Length: 203
Image (tube, rainbow, N blue to C red; front, side, top):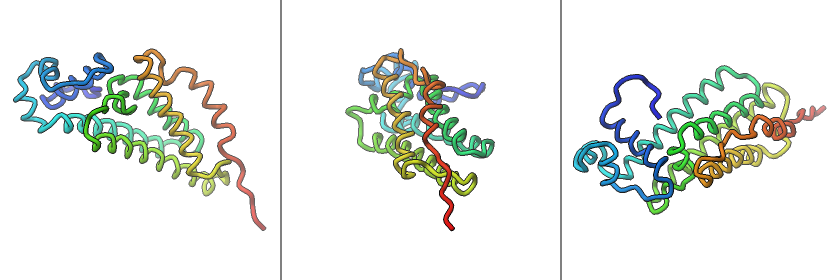
């Protein structure tokens, strides 16, 4: 999950250790004691940086949000048309999950079983934000390109997000063998072909 080349801070090391454990110990509940051993510090040292395990998970979720939505912002700046925008946004999320298997367990909710409901709500809000962004792209298609979704906008955006969530779920369920981007280059053209149609001009 590290993107920079600088020496990570202790806080970053803890989050990296947690992400690695989510990847390596798929299906197991992570304890503070095990995480302390993974990072090579005492449990007390962990608590100096994070008051609870929930805050550690929130730190990872915040990293996911910041990374994805910063890159989505760049896509919106660089790509003017709706279908390429949607395709690149979905591909971004799938590739991010594929490159970060431990974080994909957070996105799929698998790692949050038995954890506080607040964490599951944070993941829900992340996907709600993604869906809202796709709705906006589809709304702008009519203004910019004279095209509108073949489905109602909420249904169309939900269909796209369901594709992402389903692929991430498959990835986690297969213990990271079924890659989220597998067959995507072939499937996206089929999915997108019927997504937009010419808006009917009224007299």
